[in-house]
Length: 54
Image (tube, rainbow, N blue to C red; front, side, top):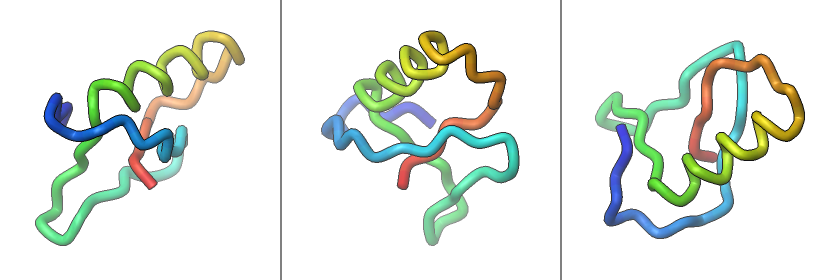
């Protein structure tokens, strides 16, 4: 889930293997971190499907 109120932390992981969830079973990422991760994926021709917060 994208959460606009979260600050951009620069901490994320791009993975094909698994989705990281918090104690409540939710996967959350800030808009800023999602944007950075998408740019990293596009610039590196990364074919991974999952972007996780770390």
